[in-house]
Each structure stands twice: as C-alpha cells, then as structure tokens.
Image 1 (tube, protein in one colour):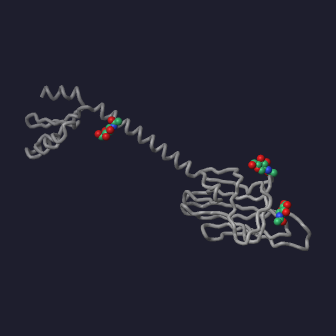
Image 2 (cartoon, rainbow, N blue to C red):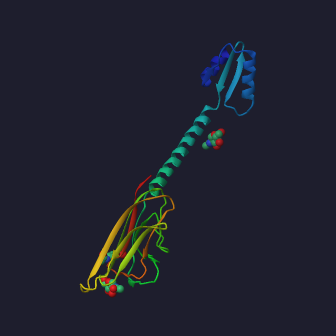
Image 3 (cartoon, rainbow, N blue to C red):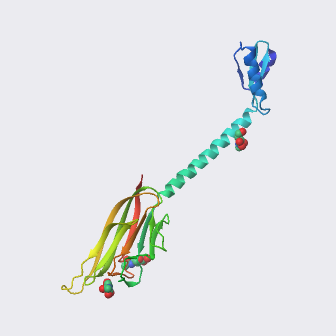
Length: 221
Ligand SMILES: *[C@@H]1O[C@H](CO)[C@@H](O)[C@H](O)[C@H]1NC(C)=O
Ligand SMILES: *[C@@H]1O[C@H](CO)[C@@H](O)[C@H](O)[C@H]1NC(C)=O
Ligand SMILES: *[C@@H]1O[C@H](CO)[C@@H](O)[C@H](O)[C@H]1NC(C)=O
C-alpha cells in the first residue's frame, strides 16, 4: 500500500475497479503489453489494480504542438478561402483605334488590364474563367460612330447572355456613342465568360478607355 501512495505523489494516478476478474486482469495486461512505449502501465497489488500514466509531460507537449499545428493549418485554410473570394477584373480594349469589321464573330482580347485580382481573366485569350461557384456581375461597354453598326456579344460558355448593338444611323450625321450593358450570372467552377465582336461591325478604343469589360464575384455559393 505504501508503494501505491508513493506512486500517487509522483505521478498522476488513476485506480481501476478493485474487483476485476482474473480474466479482465489478463486482458488489461495483454493490452498494456502490446506496446512497450504505452504511457499507461498497470500493476496488480493484491486485490487492486493500479494504472499509471507515465510520461505525461511529453504527451501534453505533443498535444500542445499538435493543437498549434492544427491552428496554423486552419488559419492558412481561412486565408486561402479569403483569397479565393477576391475575384475582380477590369480590362480595356486598348489604344488600338478601330477594331473590325470581320466576316465572322471575333473574340475580343482586351489588352489594357486595370485590375485582375485572382488572375481569372486570361490576357492571352480574353476569357474569364470562374474559379468558384457563385453569382458574378459583368459589364461591357463599346464605343463607335453612329454611322457604323457595333455589336458586342457577351457569352457564358457557348451561349450569348446579352448584346450591345447599335443600328447604324445614316440620316443623323456623324456622332459618336458609347453603349453599355451588364449581366449578373450564376457560374459553376470553370464556366467561361467572354466577349465577341459581331460579324461585320466595328468597335473602337483609344487612350480614353471607352471599350471595357469588367466583372467580379458578388458571392460564392
Ligand atoms: C505526437 O504523437 C504522434 C502519435 O504518437 C506522433 O505521430 C507525432 O509525431 C507526435 N508529435 C510530436 C510533435 O511529437
Ligand atoms: C469609331 O469611332 C471613332 C471615334 O470615336 C472614329 O475615329 C472611328 O472612325 C470610328 N470607326 C468607324 C468604323 O466608324
Ligand atoms: C485610361 O486608363 C489609364 C490607366 O491605364 C489612366 O491612366 C487614364 O487616365 C485613363 N484615361 C481616361 C481618359 O480615363
């Protein structure tokens, strides 16, 4: 008994059921013997069995460092989620003057980049690709003379979502006009949004940034 009191003072101790059957005791011994490095060691003293947790400090140190690394990875995940939702772009056709006409639709590759947070607008192809499922807002604008037709088509994948179109006015003299339109679209990951110049129409841009394409994520779903 004095021995177990000593154990009490030195280690955190918990006492097992005092009236275990021999079979249960054997089972416990088998369990603790399975691993030499087990922190729980049991011994039998007469009718009583004592189990000691040895090496409690390394266990706590391990737990603490495990919790710390868990927290670090959660912080990182939160940061990643935050970054994931910073998606916005604004681009201009660029200082190139007239663009068009062509006898088929042609993709507009806006070369002047004002903002491209998340890098989801591809400056080589003019295509915006949704990185997360969500609701997005897009707007397009286009400039040219009223005497020439201008058609800008906003696509989601292969499907036209909206169009800017001016019918050429030949009886009102030459004027310049800028049109704009916008669309709120529900996109899946990987959906593509882009603009095409309608066949046989013109669009114009210069250093005034008249012909633009912008978009951003409103909220992820
Ligand atoms: C904590 O213990 C686990 C399981 O025994 C082990 O895999 C891990 O490497 C330990 N971690 C530290 C920091 O000691
Ligand atoms: C488009 O508009 C610009 C002026 O804003 C003009 O210089 C250009 O000639 C126009 N292009 C066509 C094809 O009418
Ligand atoms: C066009 O955009 C540029 C930035 O690329 C800016 O410096 C300039 O002031 C803009 N021009 C107009 C007329 O807004």
